Length: 381
Figure (cartoon, rainbow, N blue to C red):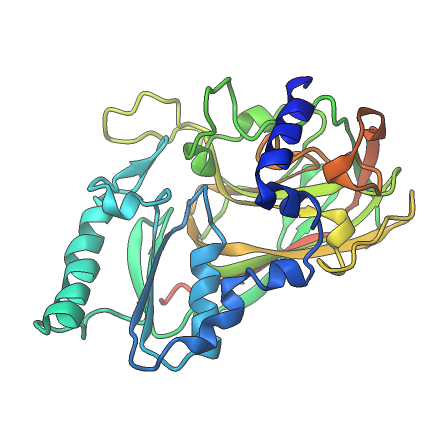
C-alpha cells in the first residue's frame, strides 16, 4: 500500500532496531547473539525452571517447546515443562475450556493452577508442600482432551511414520504401490495471497490456531490431501517434519504446510456452541519455510527454475489425537497473509523489494516423493 513506504521511512528514521531488522534478513551473528536458547548453559544448577506454554500460542508456538529442550540440553537444573491447549497466556485466564470453536472437555487453566502452579510456587517460594506429583513433562493432548505426564519430552517411545502425499488428493501411511512420481500444481500470486483465516478482522486473531480451514480448501492455490476415515486413534507427540519434493517457475517461494483434523460430518458438541462442527477442519499445526532458507538460515540460495528440489523442515511440536472416525488432512500453499510477509518469489532482498519484483510462480509438489514424518505415540501411553 502507499502508506507502507511512509511507515517504513518513519520507523526506519526514528527506531534503530527497525533498521537493524531490515538490514539483517538472514540468521547471521546479529541474530545468533539475540537467540536466548544459545545461552541456557548459564542457568545455575540451583535455579529451578518451569516452562509453561500453549499448544496454540499464536504469538510464539515455537518458543516454549524449544526453550525447554535447550535448557535440558545445556543446563543442569531442575527443569519441567507444561503445555496446555492455550493461546498466549490463557493458562492464567481462569478459563481454559475452549479456544475459538474447539472445546477441551474441562477447564484446563484451572487444572494447571491447582495441580502445577500453586504447588510449584508454594514449594519453591514458601518451602511448603511437595512437587512429587509434577512430572518432567505435563502435556495436554487435544483431540483426546486429556493430560499426560512423561519423564522426558519428546517421549522416548515415539515411532516415526511417513504420511505420503499421493495423486488425486490422497494421503496415506502406505507408499503408492506403483511409485510413479506425478505432481500437483498451483499458481501462487502475491497479489492474491492466501489469508490466514476466513472473514475480515480488525486485528490479527489468536483463534486462528484452531480455526476451520474449509475456506482455504476451496481455493485453487491450496493443495489438499486427505486420508480415508481413520479406523483407529492416531496420536502425535513431538515435532513433525515436512519433506517436499518441489519445483517452482521462479527463483524463490514460500511453503506453508498445515496439519488438519477433519471432524465427522455428524459431529457436534454437547454445549451451547452454534458453529457448524460437522466436517470441521481444525488446524492442528501450521508452519512456513521460506524456500531460500531450505538448506541454511545463514546462507540463502535461489531455486533453479523448473528443477525438482527438496524442501525439508521441522514444524513445532504437536500433542494431538486424531480420533477414530476423523480424517487427517494436509494443506500446502505458498502464502499465509498477513502472518507471513509476501514473498516476491524472486531471489531478491525482500525487505527492500519493489512492487515490480513481485511475480506469480507455478508451484509443483511431486506426489509419492513428498511426505510428512509424524511422531506417533503408541496407544498404550
